[in-house]
Length: 392
Image (spheres, rainbow, N blue to C red):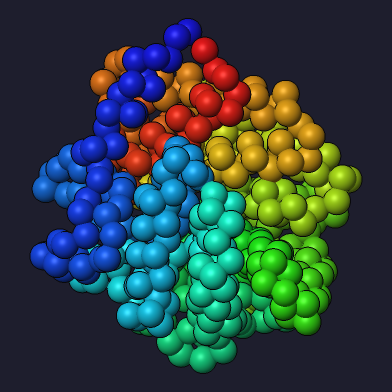
């Protein structure tokens, strides 16, 4: 199948999603640089036309580290701006809807992309200090409004209202069967994997900046986190990572693609990687990967669960597989995802926020807001996979 028409649509659609900085209206924060928003088409008078935190990482995957450096730098600087203004990076730049909580932390991932394209040590010095502050003040915070470091050195999602719903909103998985509507009570495997990645990235940055002592400390922190995650979250019987319910002192039972974040950040050994690959059978369909195990019955309003498939989670799994040498399986998954998106595009002329990968002819489980079209991270991940695997 030729995907030329699909790629052209994606390339041309970025102009619809590009937002100039001066938009201090309707609760939108004025940002210093232009950015790409998740959506631009009104659906039942609803649209995501602001810069989101973790969306920024996946959206920018479609853009080159060097030729598109200004866009990557600008969007990363917008996150710095929001951190300096609020003391944390908010869910998005919409202050009425999304203040009081953050989203899965991806700041060091973005910093590394910008630095890889520029090798600007002066900029890295400033970026490093901001990332360290976010890590320590927000994700390792021990008291309100950032009471996230909660149990055995591991962190949870949180929010200023101290509500389970708000914490689940911060997780980005709004909403899912993972947390049993008690998101404050869980140590999420994806969050702590991303914090492990922070520690690895901050080790790299510190070394680049000649901060040898600090680099040593970051390396030590990553080793400790890995040990604690394996102790609490790795199930040797199932050979899988589960979220940990620290209130009831037990692992969860919901298999989800969050269990592949340790693969993505490089914290598993070869035996664990092989086991995680085998466990993909729980999620694999002809059309891609379900967000939770494919035999889990659909749950109303739980869009981050089966039968739905999401672009960012496919990227996480695919990149994890590639980093451990499972190139052909990664290619197979990439082809499945691109075909699913392309088939729906042929039918509708647009791309969507999420897809039903159990039965693509059926609609995905909906959320508490209208399903979005022309969605940035779907566009970006699909474009990136077509490029990375030369999919034709």
